[in-house]
Length: 248
Image 1 (tube, rainbow, N blue to C red):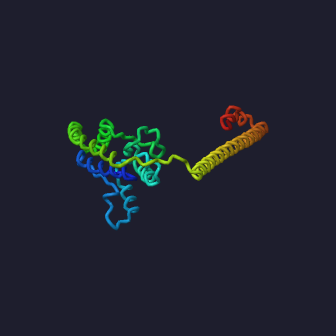
Image 2 (cartoon, rainbow, N blue to C red):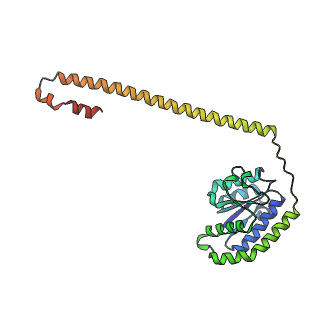
Image 3 (tube, helix red, strand yellow):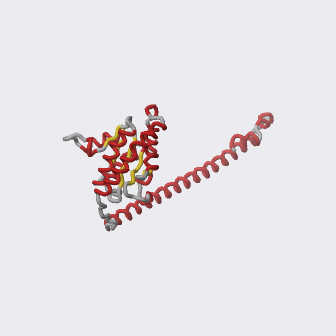
């Protein structure tokens, strides 16, 4: 099973590479892929990544405080969200304590924290996705227990070796204007939809009124014809009940 591991920034990259090698040991049937290692020299990296995104069955997005709003992370996350069901994509929150700090498309995924319980849940989810090739859970549990200390130790080393990068939370004026413009456009679309729906309702009401007028006029003509019939037996065959059955 192909697992696409997305990253951006030095800390995120090192954790992605850690997950790559560690998952291969814990779940040997898995086949992780990260762009830092697996793109051949001379390959068109954008084309290569797009091809991988279209063929993977599971995605992990390595998030940090620094990269959670970076365009490349959002691009790959959006592509994963489009190609996979929500339970097949998860974020790995490296130094983010509160998942509520994330915005879409990242907020819609399952979140994994760097704790033993949370990583175990991620491993179980990947194993279940393997279906026939999945390990028995007792076996998976023993393998996980064997390799978890190595993951935890290396994870903590990476955090120490990659200092926090200051995050600029100041919103640019252009970003604010873009958001306002986007909101205005959305409201305009909704107003047009409301007006369109109201026009359709008005048209339907007019059609019903015209139909009623036509039906009422036609019934009057039939009654007039009924009154002008000389043959008594023919008149008896035409009753108000039958007329109502026809026109109501």
